[in-house]
Length: 68
Image (tube, one colour):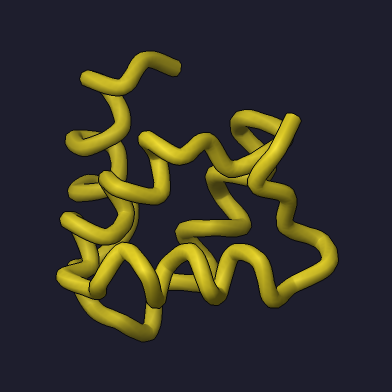
């Protein structure tokens, strides 16, 4: 998946609501095998959540990885 493909995919699959943060991160973890920094930025934009909060959640769950 390319960066340019992620925004439309998130818009299609996930409503722009804060409650979808964990499902979006789990989806990305499954797609990429980890959570790329650029993808976390797009999630922040899509869900209208500060990037620091998205990163905090991504690093709080042991099943999510921010490094390959």
